[in-house]
Length: 98
Image 1 (tube, rainbow, N blue to C red):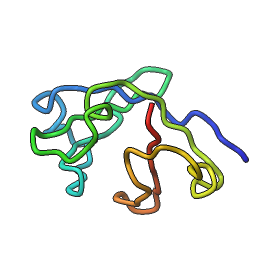
Image 2: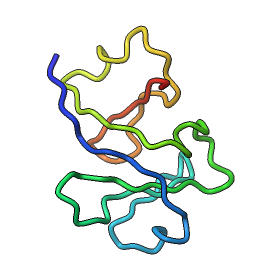
Image 3: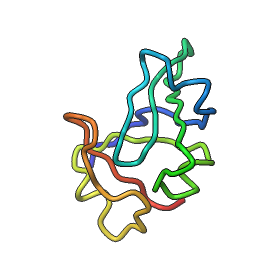
């Protein structure tokens, strides 16, 4: 199965990123996310509102995102803390516990 590092994710304060034009809002999780830096390594910043349903580990800990050729197969038998979904058009994702 092909997988590559897609980007690193790091938390940011909601006030710092909410109004940036490169930020997307995911109503399902009440979170904001986007690439807003000029680093050579892609870093995606995200912030959740106090009412977000996201697991606290996702909200508070940096993590790495990977791209898989078959995400459905990649998450079999994993402890999933963010279920497989496609909040952003053309982009499916899930997150195992870490």
